[in-house]
Amino acid sequence: KDDTALVIGLISASGSGDDTADAAEPTLAIGDGILDDAQATAITAALTALQATGSHGEITRIPAPESLSVGLVVAVGLGDADNLDDHDQVRQAAGIAARELDGLESVATTLSTVDLIAAAEGLFLGAYRFDEFRSEKSKPNKTPPQRLTLLVESKSKEAKADLERAVAVADSVAIARDFVNTPPSHLYPEEFAARARTLGSKAGLNVEILDDKELDAQGYGGIIGVGKGSSRLPRLVRLTHTAKKSPKKVALVGKGITFDTGGISIKPAANMDQMTSDMGGAAAVIAATILAARLDLDVSVTATVPMAENMPSSTAQRPGDVLTQYGGRTVEVLNTDAEGRLVLADAIVRACEDDPDYLIDTATLTGAQMVALGTRTPGVMGTEEFRDRVAARSADVGENAWAMPLPAELRADLKSRVADLANVTPHRWGGMLAAGIFLKEFVPENVQWAHIDIAGPAFNTGGPWGYTTKGGTGVPVRTIAAVLEDIAEN
Ligand code: BES
Ligand code: MN
Ligand code: ZN
Image (tube, rainbow, N blue to C red; front, top):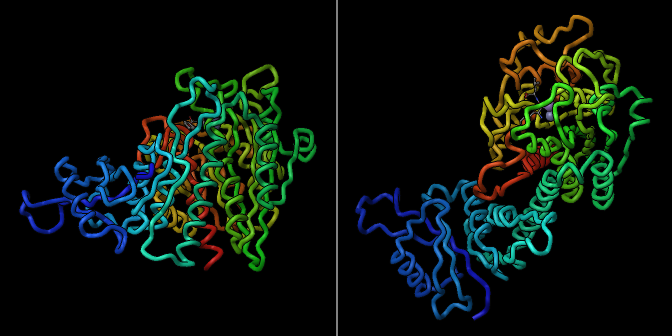
């Protein structure tokens, strides 16, 4: 016997049609030619004896039948047979299995015979760990398997390409997660920009970085205003993937606040540590642009990423200050904690100088996103058609961004006594939408635009679930990737 474990999918007996409850047994989800009948029967019998039901995410371990070369079989519940057509059900089940496999050297799975792409993505996403900041002594002694084998009924070029894509996607999500999980002591604008340069260059992207002096000289008042309370000075990073053929251009913009104290409008101490995730949008657009290059998508993509640390100090901006955004519009900063929209406005104006066809910005922008939609569902706003397209692609990949409106009447509440615009409304109603309305002011009419608020979904503070481990989630890398693929192919 070798030390490989075999992960198989188990379909729940319930909903199988016949209601003879006592005869109901869960069934194995395996492709032809992978297990022989005797092996399948033995495994099903053992699982039934252990009262495995096949409910979604259930994990059952059994010793493998003699005739198999592996020693251990791990069954993961896929739920009802209907679930097999739902990529995210398979992806989540694979992710749960991957989180249970620590300590095993090598794992083979038949989940790939159900849905190769979903199984691969789920396994790789679920096997993500972040232990960079544990010393040797406190590193977990069990690590995820070093070797994953995805069994298929027959090898094909197509299967190989699907697998390569899944690996690329999971690697890219891991880049975003690593950025979010790196603490603000170690990831501040200068360092963030340097890491983006290293990863971007390696992926073949064109990289351009503006430092604080250049930002100041060129009139990036939003980024400078937000960043000037910190000794860690701001940056603006631009990464470009150039299409081989297509003239289509997508601009990506991501909020890169490496830590958000709120500034002078300081946040309460409780949970302030979570503001390490306030660069989740930046992390996602950097990762998605790297992925566009790796998949060689036939669409040009430029990420414009403002990076700043929002700190209170004697050099910080004050409530009541007026700043001039890049491009010349003035904003009265009534609340220094509404800083994301200030850095994004500069970046959006810069990004749109390139005349993109589409603009996607994403940001951990408002606590109101979580009030409206909870911690796992991003809100997507913007020009209606493109907004709905982004929501649809997001549903395809299981990130589930939900379309939200931009009610025009909120614009009046952003009027300032002294400047073109105030950065907050005098009330808290529709806070996510009001932030979207603010950004809309800076988006040219002819650009198809989607704004994705990921305040909750970027960072998992609860327990792990599915393929989502604690900490940075990498949302919405896969949504953006799916939209870029959609644009490149259609
Ligand atoms: N980064 C926060 C939003 C946030 C809150 C992200 C919780 C993740 C979890 C953002 O900069 C912020 O502070 N927004 C304010 C806006 C308000 C002052 C209009 C908020 O949501 O309270
Ligand atoms: Mn804030
Ligand atoms: Zn913030």
